[in-house]
Length: 161
Image: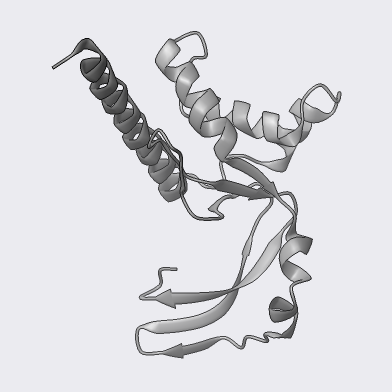
């Protein structure tokens, strides 16, 4: 094996490790504490105009995960994964969609299935799109945050979305 091939395999292994690490961090976050970031926390960081809401959320996630920007492996995770994954969502983009406006949901339960309306509170973390897979095989899970309460129709099986 050439040095170039060995370096390529090493780089790919590092990417796979980072993919696994970010996926596990987000899984824990979404499972255990999706509402850990609150509007007052974001406001405190953005009120002077030095940070955007996205930058504040990235900083809060970094703190929540116990990452240290001074550590190179943490810095790479913050810059290459967390920063591009965070999206500040505009509820109007969804509520102004013709389908969303027309759909009327009554709370209904049939066996293991339930159809009802639910809501995300401001800055509750939600998966908001498909996984982004880059040319280098890094995987960025898009994590969205509505700035205002957002209601949506939900389908549950055995109480789970």
